Image (cartoon, rainbow, N blue to C red):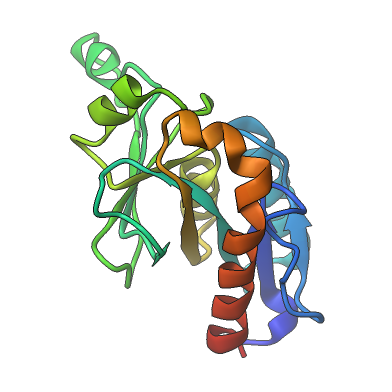
Length: 183
C-alpha cells in the first residue's frame, strides 16, 4: 500500500514531535469524541485503502509495565456496559487489534492520576489512555486496519501530573518505532 494511505494519529503535537518527515500526521485532539471525529474524517478523505497507526503515551496500570506496547485489545473503561447490557442494549466496549503483543489498553475521557482508580483499572488492563478505543472503534466501523502504539509515560498516579515533562521521552520512542517499522 502506498505511504500516502497511511495516517499516523496522535492526540497532541508533543507526542508526535519525532514522527519521521513525509508521513501523513493527524493531530486529533484529546479525548474519545475528538479522536473519533478526526479519524473518521481522515479515513473518509483517504478512502478504503487507508491504514491508521495511533501513537501516544499511556499510563502504566501495573508496576511491571514500562516501555512500548502494541495492544491486542482496547477497552472503553468509562461506560456502564454491564448496566446497559442488563437493559437489553448491545454496547461495544472492546475492540480486538490484530497482531498485537497481548497487552490490553483501557481508554476513557478521564486523565488517570489517582492510584486508587489506577488499581481498579489494573484488574482489566495493562495501561490507560484517552483516545485508543475511539480510534480503534472508528477504524473497525470503517473497515480499515489500525495499529495502536503506546509508550508508557507515567504510572497513572500523581506522577501523571508531570506528563508535560515526561512526554518528550515517549515521543522519541514512538518516533523511533515509526522509523523502524513503517516503510
